[in-house]
Length: 433
Image 1 (spheres, rainbow, N blue to C red):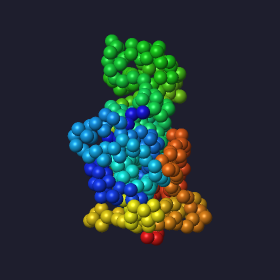
Image 2: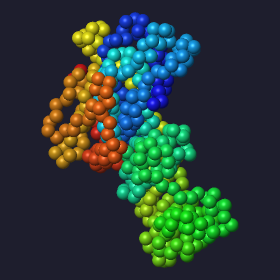
Image 3: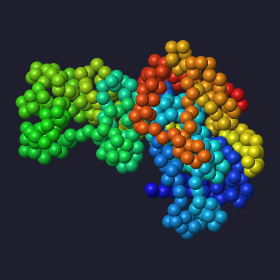
Image 4: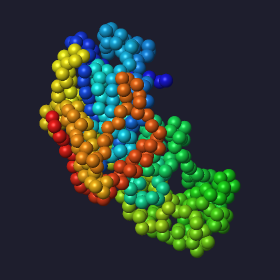
């Protein structure tokens, strides 16, 4: 098990040291992870990263090499070093279900423990959720406008090598069908796909030789890349070699809408009526929406997906919202909050539910401060227990998160699916406090 203890910021440990010295480190506290606002124009966000965060929490330890580094570089004093040597999170964590949608103010994670145990998780949790949720939000917009046509995640070469694995996972939660990333297949059981790039065609003396070699190796159900030279000639050659059994052709450049129509017509005229047309090449949700009327059977998306389609981070923060008035085990919890300009937070421990209409359509994100809001009979509670007394209790299969996402998006009002800029799909209402 590889330690995640130093996947953090220097100041997490200096805060810990100062709190240990002042005697406040053991005060019971509540931290929450949330966003003050959705990215400009977005109608909803998507929770992703919960499973990875639980794995990272389980590995959040400080081994001898890490402790030696902290001592050598005088990051912490000896008292803090000894405390870190035995660190084990022993608190409780609740969170929105992975794959669910969220809005501004939604308490995606509620972490309750001592100040010392909870504060040093800030950077780890934020780095995971900010990245994964940004990818999932972009993926959700893309699969929404794809209207059931399969989407393939293929952005590995456009981001950090391990970020690519996390991105493939997040995209799958939000409805992508497959990934090109083999490590994501190993780590998360995602279905992987891939055939050939332009270099394979250029390797051979002729395009016919390249297609023949690919068909011989991968079978007639493979996808042939037809835009290396001349698309029309390539499609003709592909059908001559494979006949109507050819699985698919891929177009990676040019006017994709026009070319898709031309290729579809040519395939049908040649008798390859079941051969699919796949398009790739700098696609985003807007390009996919523009292709809605084109005879396209699937999309491959890379750069825009793994960079959050313009918003590579979700804007999450991790803030102290309540703390005990003393270090006594039965001390009263007091609500605390930042009042900084443009960075105001709402104090008090939160509970959340989504108010639904009688028809099951989401109407309001209701956040109770200090106590759970009252369910009027149609509502859906949003927080799940993830960690109890330091033990992880909230793990679930990835397909459960994928199914939750599909249900959550379905219950949103129709305006949530618009790509145009607008207000969040439903308002957030705080009660109590």
